Image (cartoon, rainbow, N blue to C red; front, top):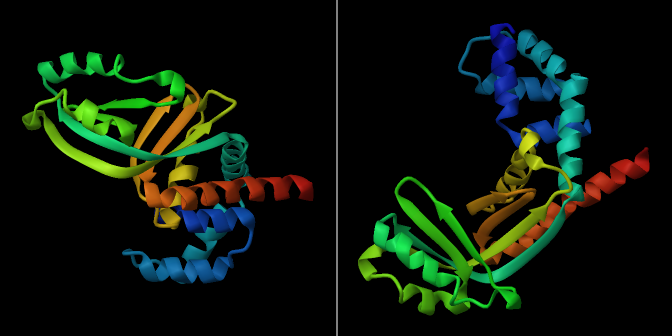
Length: 223
């Protein structure tokens, strides 16, 4: 791949709105090339950039791959919940020992959840806020790094093993990012993708993801 093609490809790949527009066929190639030409650090001729954009936008594999990711997302079963919070804990032996107590404190038959995330330095619990004070009490204040309230959750349950579909989650995160929705945390378990967002963003996030379903359905009808 020559230098200008590589630069243009990278530029487009990093902008989901451009990729989406090219996939759906409503971006003017020359207008896009002028925009990219103005924003590239390299001194390429406009015609070379136009040629690179045309090669990108006419790639059948690219279009079909993107469509496939959107269709899989559209077919996923979606659910949401609100009134959640998170507790960020120091990763210490005493904290690990205390974690075992949590599961005997919560009535999971009533639909309550406990999400556990672990990094190199911390452990985060994502729980229903009704349990915050009770769970908080089993840890020492010095073990608690941060508590975040007013969180919500979006769950996408796919019909396939999503671990083997590159770029699938980029569809979700990019679409939410375009609508100024920040993902606070994420969990992948089996074929379920769980996103933690601010509670005030839950309705908007559901609407954004539902728009993918509607778009996918309209494409099937066109065929």
